[in-house]
Length: 92
Image (cartoon, rainbow, N blue to C red; front, side, top):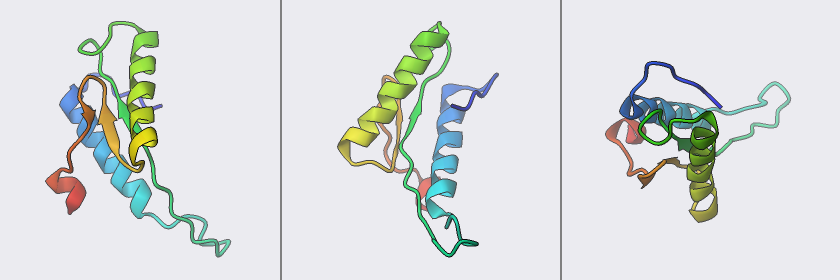
């Protein structure tokens, strides 16, 4: 979980997309010669737009993440929006 105080939902989604791209494009465990790729499933929820409680935010972010995991994986979804369309930043 990553908390982004004083961040709009739109900016949190942009951070999630950049983090998703960074994780999926990194080759991990190269020193051990395992050269592993990770495909993250990311969920975003924002206060107070999506929920005004900690529990509600965590539940909605988790729900968004599982929406990605249970459909095609390796993507970003936001509470009350669904799986996000590819952005020009994510594509490039």
